[in-house]
Length: 269
Image 1: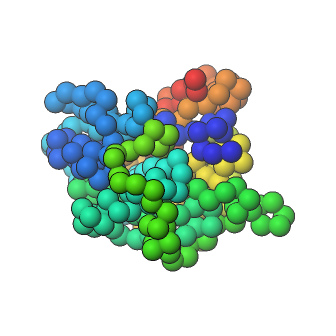
Image 2: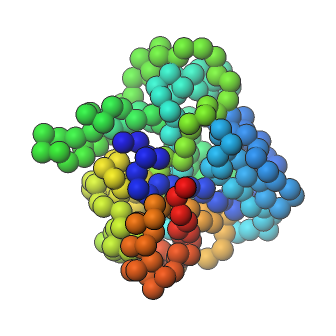
Image 3: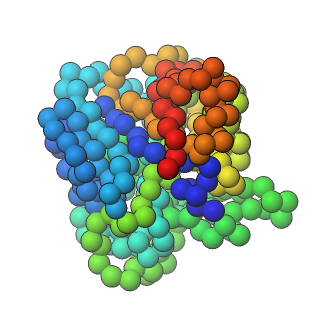
């Protein structure tokens, strides 16, 4: 099971940005995403012809505070370890300002941010047998990443985002974890797979997590007001999951979480 094989997965993430050209260029250069379509108002970027990120221009948008509810990071999932290793060499060669690198047991992950402060993770999953404790529960940690060992797995030069790169998960800042669980697990139907202090993780179909919510910087945050940053998250659901969500929401598939973050549920094809 990988992120995209689950009955629900992350689709396109939409961000509001002040400088559309500079931000789109950053994602093209840093992550190798291809411009799939765009104009002066918005740009959609992706990999292998699949849309992963939509950027909407609003030069007058209020700058989002790091203590508000909204985006913690988007997480781009590589199809295999050599692909992430090739990217590591690219990041080093281009002097990308990396903010962190972690071994989570379930994955190997590297963190940075775009020019407007939106957090980004790029990662690869470890084999599923490494995800669980003896009782079968998901076991995630935050340990130092052996970057040298990862880099040694490169099998050639970086040539851009590979086919099979997906939006593996989205990590959100919220005001209260219990409220977040009621929405993301209770309403959307994502099982809770793990807890950290101040955070909950949710994954469909046995995946370690498609979504995460934390209060590390945003405890007690109220409703969002228009700003830069996260505009919407698309959830792609198979027919049974979509029907179950619709039954719980009175047929609504354009939803908002308790802090006003737009969640758009579409049918997975």
